[in-house]
Length: 275
Image 1 (tube, rainbow, N blue to C red):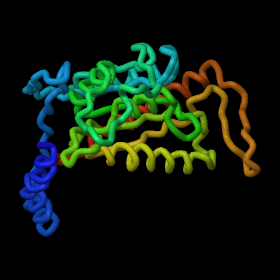
Image 2: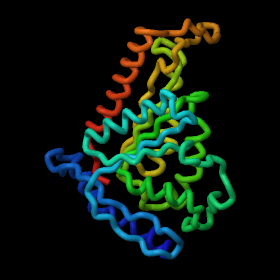
Image 3: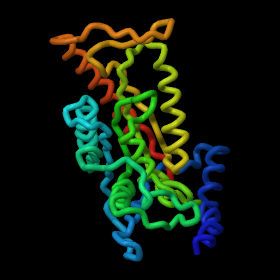
Image 4: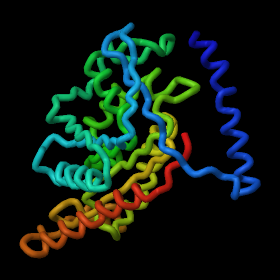
C-alpha cells in the first residue's frame, strides 16, 4: 500500500498544480490562502487508531534549546510565547532541557532506510505529536559555532526523523511554518555576521525546513546577546569589550526585546500559502 500511495499521491496534487500555473499566467485567478487542515496525530502505540482533531485553533510550538531557565534564550522564548498568545495562538512551550530530552541518538530512534513506518521510541513519538499539532514552530537557541547547539540538533536528529519529517511523497509537515530565533554574541558591525546568517539560512531553511516540506522558514538572528560586546578584527582576533551594566545594560535588553518582537511580528504577518 505504501508503494501505491507514492504512485497515486502526485495525481492528487494535479488540480492544485494547474491552479498555481493559472495564477502565474493570470494573477486575478489566484485564490485566497487558506489555513492548513489539522493533520492526524500519531498513534499512541503501533496499530492504534489515529483520530482527527477538528479544532481550528492555531497552535504554536515554541522550543527552548538552552540548559538554563534564567538564560536570555529562555527569556526570549517566553516573550515570544506571550506574543503568540496575544496574536490568538495556543502556545505549547517545549523546554528541551527542563523536560529532560536526551539529544543523543539511540538504536530505537536510528532511521531504518528500508522501513519508513518504523515505530520510534515513545519519547520521540510524543514529540512528533506535538509537532503535528502545531501550525507554526519557533525554536529559540544560542548560536554555537555558527550553528545550533547539540540540544536542538539532537532533537532534530531524533524527532524530525525518516518516515515522519521526510521520506514521503506527501510530507506530513507540509504547510507548516517555522521561525528560528538564534541569539549571538556578535555585534551588528562584526564581519562574521554575514557569514553566520548565510550558514544558518542554508542549513535551517534549505537543508532542514524546506527539505521536510515546510511552506515557510525564516531565520531571525539576534545580535548583541552578550553583556560584553564582541567582534572580530581584520586579523581574525576576537575583541571583547567592557561589560555593559546598569542603565546601559537595561537599554541593551530593551533593544534586544524589540528586535525579537519585530522578528515574530513580521513572521506572523507573512501571508500563509496553500499547502
